[in-house]
Amino acid sequence: MKKTSWQPTRPTLTNPLDPGNNSGQDWCPNACTSYDTQISSSPALHSDFYQYLNGLASGAITPVQGDLLDAATPVLRANGYRRKICHGYDDVAKTIANYYNTQPSVAEVQFQPGSHPAGDGKLDYQAEWDNAMSFESRVACSYPGCERKPVFNRMACGCFADDTTIQLASGQLMPISEIKGGDLVWNPKTLRAYHVTEVTAGPELIPMIEIKTAEKRVLVTVEHPLLTKQGLKTAEDLEKGDILMDGQKTATVISVDKKAPDLTNPPIVWNLVLDGPNLEDHYVNANELMAGDLYLQRLLKEKKQGCG
Image (cartoon, rainbow, N blue to C red):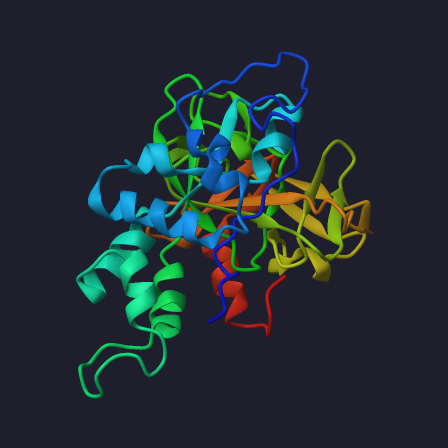
């Protein structure tokens, strides 16, 4: 049976809680603590992972204790962000245990193809394993509160570079990689604040688009939406001379350039969704330039094939 799909991506570090940034500070020391255990440091030992799932399923290991560090965390910390991104496997463990009514390690042995009675209604283990792994979650813990907040896996949709600043309701400019669900974000189109209902993150493997006006710059993926005088356009469809609607003003695009990513260390890109019911409710100030959120990008996707 194939046993490789579970392994989370992670960097190779002598001490994963200290990537060598200037402060050396572990901002949320109780988050992602399982990274240093034998289980997570020995991903080839699959039996160790099953014992780990047993602990999560039984409650002997709490979700917070069981989170594994994501490769995005050292990147964030090296850039001074006080945040951890973690993988959570508690729902994976519970899905397997509930389906087979036994520990994940026992189910893995007993429900190999052909090993269980025909017609008992139980899937072969590999099929249920693949289903259970779809419940792997990503969570973010941000200093100072370090609350465990969900981060949804990016499904190849339009996003911002991780150093893009987003204007909060308070006027503060915060890197998008530190925005979390529930934050109040300022909308320059409606001049109102909206709660963030969803945050997504993931690697980008194709060229991104750098858009410049006379005073501002933003780096986004090719399908990210921006509002022009002609209506919403994706970043890849913008042209020099296009007029962007920038809050209550306009701004002329002076350049649109593709920027190839480092494929050996792909950048982590981010997006968010605001909670308003109307189209105009879904705009943010990104590097002080108005841009659409993920909700608007999903609407554009219906009009175009693909999503980058």
